[in-house]
Image (tube, rainbow, N blue to C red; front, side, top):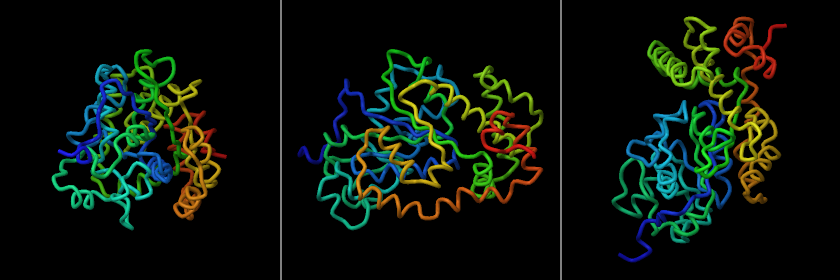
Length: 332
């Protein structure tokens, strides 16, 4: 086979340049991933841990506690994941520098359907990006940004005092949304399409797993007996937010980003993110970001119209006084 048709190499000693976007779903994780994907040299992947048969499939089983991770396989998993694409990933923008010119020439971005037409035989939920379409060396040297939802264990494994010194560090961007905005989006855009009883059962099982695996971090959960479906979701939001913050405290490899501030001031907020990641900022990037954020403020502030007394009481019961004060969710 000609070299141009081979899959990108996977050197056994190579540690990829990786950054994670962490946060709860419905908190702007997709929004931030898309904004970072505006950079020509970044390779962005969406929830690779949720792909059946994918390189990070096992990671979905240890999101709550770091001790469930076998460190020996960590970088092997990542080396495989960063030279792949998958069914949850966005179409590859044609301006990426690591695409071959023949691959980036179409006016539209490279979707999975397009990739399969160009390179027959691609299958499965995750697949290596073929060297016929990407420059292998440039791809491996890119900054690989992986979005993984609701995974405090990722922060614990890679950051701070809890990090194993034998494991190379990776940067972590933690996006946090006002919990009132988070709950509104979760309720309208996810819960409304689900069986509420099944969601509650799943959430209660998740909280029980937190208490079992991380009794210290989840100690506050017992203060809310018999939570309803909204309270159970907020309790897990609190757990993930507090645990990721704790893992990142004092680490130069950790950056917390406010979704609400990102929506209000996308250019200045994103420039800080790009600086943290070591990504170049340009007029082209600014123009792409401007097109993607023209309605972001309206979306971010929509929750304010729903902050009645009942909602405030729910936040006070589940989040505790410190978080309620931080996000101005206290009764007057």
